[in-house]
Figure 1 (cartoon, one colour):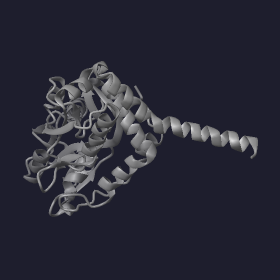
Figure 2 (tube, helix red, strand yellow):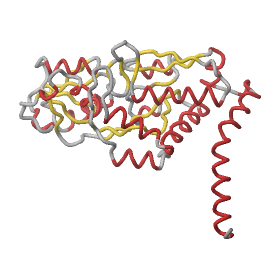
Figure 3 (cartoon, rainbow, N blue to C red):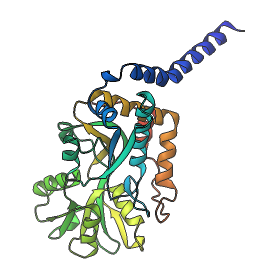
Figure 4 (spheres, rainbow, N blue to C red):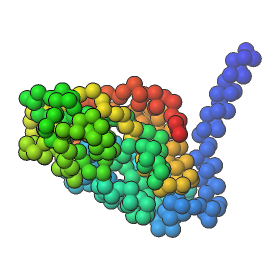
Length: 308
């Protein structure tokens, strides 16, 4: 055999063995010294449970299906994290408990230990990183406007002397408050308790537009009986990176989460999950979001790495 070919083949085999044997090595080490676990992993071993939060209507990331069970793209990613914990730390009986949260109580629920992983549609922002930790991003969203199809509204400038609704506790609320105070003070701002509530405010005519992440708007529209009655307009008001949220300073858990996401991204499994939730019919009614993977997200899936 040609020496160069043999050397190349041997290097590939060695690299493969290193990757394939890593979970086994980590699992054996964890099993041998269970007392070495700290933070959420220690809590999981002691209680036998991991508590994952979900949102009631954040299609397709985290919501209830027709059996009133949590489902969605982000929920599935968190399920894979729990699978990794079971395997790597020898916790085969570890159970998953699902708990609903709202936009304005998700961080406090995490900080108080009510939940262990927040798996909805939370944006990784510098302000929130002071309070919690985030995983690698698994989605990139843009804040835009939802308006009735017949409305002559193209952007914020067309909302002068009208009302704009945002969902309380979201990054869109903070962004809109800053933008309106600085550049559009004659636009009245109104709050909805949830994304569904905010949409109903527009549907009922109490607001002319609803500002939030475009993917959440697309999910709301796709679930309507008459989806062609509304449209998403305007240039992106900001970009948001969605990530799994964890308690601040829990480095061992963050390493497990990022290790899981990296494996899913590099293996192509994350792309399959994305296509399943954004490009094919999803429960409960078989709607199709029809949102191909963006170039930004493709770059992340190809080269997953922390930016901060």
